[in-house]
Length: 104
Image (cartoon, rainbow, N blue to C red):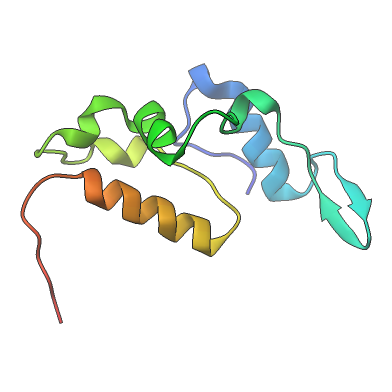
């Protein structure tokens, strides 16, 4: 990963962080044979916020719009753990209105 074409100029700081983490050049520390990075506090979920606050901050009120189309392709919530990703996906799915389709 050397250049992310989907991110815009307004989010340059986040762009750089994502690229640096992706290519292994973001500063890290070794603790007990594990490598850790320090994400800036302003990019993290605040202690007094919950997942619903995070979803609303990233996607806005459009999350409740039944005609969502392609609007979610420009927003992302990153998490290093599959269980966290699943929890966030479930919370987002519960907020999206519309018909439910099951396929087998």
